Amino acid sequence: MDLATIIGIVSAFSVVIFGILMDSGIMLFVNIPSILIVIGGTIATMLIRHKMSDVVGSINVLMRAVFVKAQEPEKVIGQLIDMANIARKDGILALEKIKSDDPFLQGAINHCVDGADPEFLESVLSKELNYLADRHARGMGIWEGVSEMAPAFGMIGTLIGLVQMLANMSDPSSIGPAMAVAILTTLYGSLISNCVAIPLCTKLATYSKDEQTVKQVIIDGMIGIQKGVNPRMLQEALRAALPPSRRDLE
Image (tube, rainbow, N blue to C red; front, top):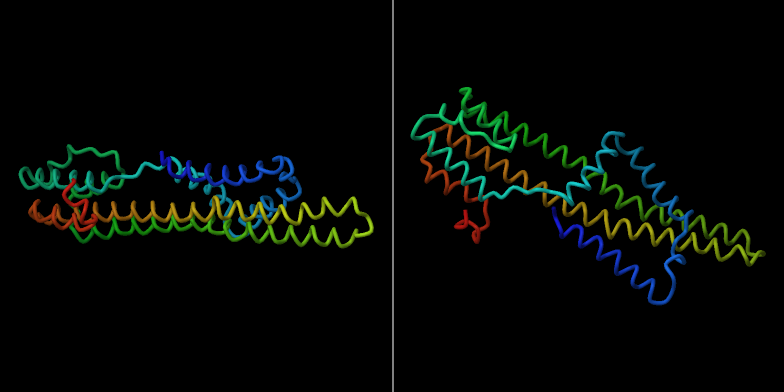
């Protein structure tokens, strides 16, 4: 679980709520028409821009940002070097006994044991990595759309409220509710965009890049094992994926 995501979202909304409660009650900032305009309009636009399955899947993308279980590249490099030593000592077929919880790594091991040559192994694993990047891009694209559309519908709600207000200037009792819709839709759109969607996109992009780096390390490591590269030389090559400060920690 990524506590930073949870703490960040809760803190952002807490600051806003605290500011609200300093001088007024929370219910003053709750307006159902404004909520429907911003949230309903944003969801509708996402359904227009993306497939239904991708929109529904965006919830899983959100959960990934909260409950992500990131792989540590240092440990992956250590596993690969252990396998390189086994393969150097007992042959590639000895890797058949190795079982991994990572489907990508296990698939690479199976290909090696089945006798795949390095070129075929690199081609298959690189394609899988590219498809992974495409899936991640689609998921992030939806939340990028939310970051754009929520403020846009906030502005639409503002225009609706202003039209209602100007159309009923003769009725003072209607000015307040119309102005509330006008202002609160802008507030809701900004909160959704700046407190959730934009930070979430940045976090997901970071996780995606980290996962792709780990998988590229697996590709390079398994190809090195398949080619019979010396484990010590392979370790030095794989460490290039790590920041200098972490290269002696694995």
